[in-house]
Image 1: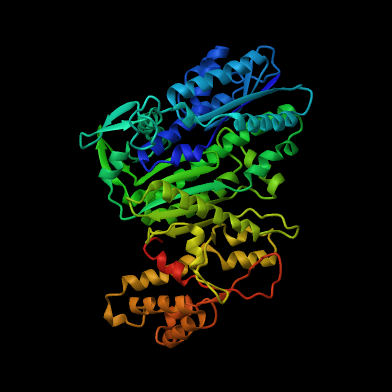
Image 2: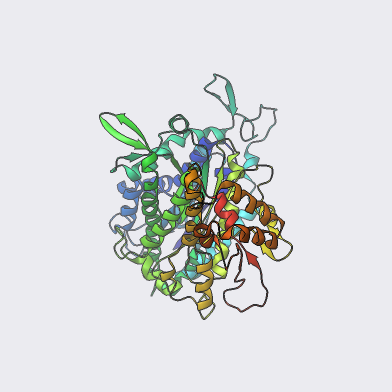
Amino acid sequence: MFLVLIETSGNQNFIFATNKLKENIGASELTYRVGTQWLSEIIGNITNNSELQKWQDGDSFRKTLLEVKDNPPIENDDSEVEIINAVSGKALLITKKEDTAKDIITQINLKCLQQAPSIDVCGVYVKFDWHNPIQNAVKEVYEKLDEAKSQLLSPQFRFLKLPIIVDCNTSGLPASHLETNPENDKIPLSAGSFAKRNNADDSLQRMNQLIQESSLKFPSNTNDLEKSFTPEWLGIVHADGNGLGQIFLNFYKYANNNRDYIDKLRRFSLALDLCTQNAFQEAIKVFEDDGKRKIKKNKIKKVLPVIPLVLGGDDLTVVCDGKKALEFTQKFLLAFEKETARDNLQDVGNIIKEISEKALQSEGLSACAGIAIVKPHFPFSVGYDLAESLLKSAKTVKNNVQDEANNTVSCSALDFHIVYDSSGVNLKLIRDRLQLRDNTKLYKRPFVITPLNQLDQATELSKQWASFYHWDKFVDKVNLLTKNKQNAQESDKDKDYLPPTQSNALRSAIFVSKEEADARFKLIYQRYKDITKELAESDKSLFQIMPINATKNTSNNVYITSFLDALDAVDFV
């Protein structure tokens, strides 16, 4: 038998390299089709399997993969190909014949060259004995994929510039198409950019199928988004599951034999995709009040100010109204935890709960997210890079929430940044500017999202750390300042809120030193006691000693404040 692995690489660069949102959306759709629709149709034609040939949607494809008669076990005499796993940009399958493996890889590469010329896809296969553990073949095929990728030229070498050709307006590659923009100008586009733009509307229509039973819908295209909404801020949200790499690496430990391994891996991968979709559907409800009513064929729908770019596996990337980006992300992370802990997921049961209990000693999975909040005309690719850096920052939480054996306790977190000054958006430089020489940090991000009562396995020090950095406590402080802003015009309540002048004075003092800020805070403490008492991190101070490492005691005192974080988030929580 032959184990076949097909995978796209450089996905982030392929999807997010351009500032054109329409191309980002279309590129995401093309990546999705590689491991799902195109693969399904190719295998269906090779095996004469009508269920795989007639592509309908993701839900139907999931049911087909789980149905034995449509995706028969490779041990069966009449089975030529068995799809183990097929998701956006990736597929793992078994064939009985080497020629079949070669044919599938050849056809998927040809399809990509025709339909997505600038995508980077690679396929490899290895021969293995069914009577030996399949995990050895899985390891070997991934090693072979890495080797093959190292020998391949970049997709950009497909677009040589001799003879001299006009450059594409967005990618810089040689143009092959002309597109007319709203101003009737002719815009030169490369084959890759043209393919991305050509598939953008299909991507949005596919996403709309997720909520077709509700009264909600996403914009039908990017122009619709711009016409329907004029947001002051845009949120770029990038989320990713925790611990999945380790789970897949050790997946053989949770199976009894090859058949059990294949069935569980398939169900787990499909369940992960389903959980992300369900969590997204729950989280977008925060936008309902902001939706624009639209009547079509006597049906009233609310168009939501959100466009999903990537939604599959454990990955989520969306562009949305920046004012609701933080709330949306928090709701998504909590819903993701809840969905992965369910016993009754549609078609796949409790497979994620079963595996996570064995792998992580947790009922479900967790995820982290980075949110970059930018102005509408801010370069999208730069905003995405910032969101990705914020995601990496959020994932550092795992280093501080651990059990007695120093194992990571499943815990969701988020980090965010609001770009008021576009002169520098490097996260490290931003955070370095918020650290004073005297062991004082002027930010508290990232924040823990998982409810504290779900961290029972963590050590006491870890629980203290999580409590110190918890989102709920941060939101309480933001709400205090939000109330202050709402009451700022009511002069008869001058002691019930902290006037903006006082907030700004505290902000200025914080950048001088901890001592200057605390002195300023004490001057106003009694006058605004109902507010200042709640704003204080410790006794009559905006600062508190930070637990540097939740697993170790330390004598180093680093002071930290969330006051600037709260001021930044006043209009966004």
